[in-house]
Length: 162
Image (tube, rainbow, N blue to C red; front, side):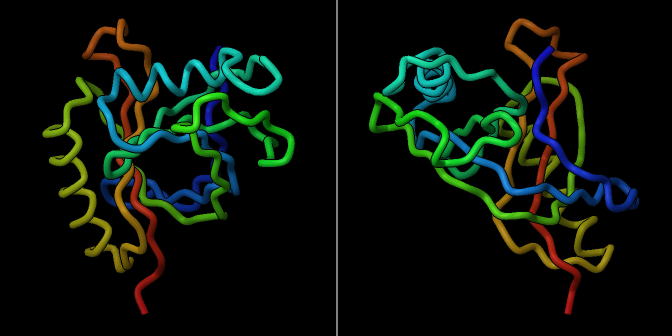
């Protein structure tokens, strides 16, 4: 079974969950199509790195403003992960963050994600939160999973309104 990025549910609010994500490490690629970015990232975890080391696949695959990322296994640090062979793969560390999350099923199209993101942004503001970062789209399933049971999410970094 694929490891999922850990989080704690802080609250269940109308139409979304409020979650706390701990710091994590991402392997990311900017620009390019989803399929080519996925292949580049998959090559890194399949051994395309300085130590020819295989790294466990985790979920979700994240997309944010033309950047695609794999979340590295829980407990990974920038210091203990091997250097990617492909310079397009950039390793970054994220900070602890508060996130509004909406889960939905179906195809992971740009228009579908945007529709869910717009609705979530409205609910977040209505609930009294400020949006403090760009929306991320999260895909949890392989492409051969039937569309009607796919697990997708919209994630928006938030803070209590001041």
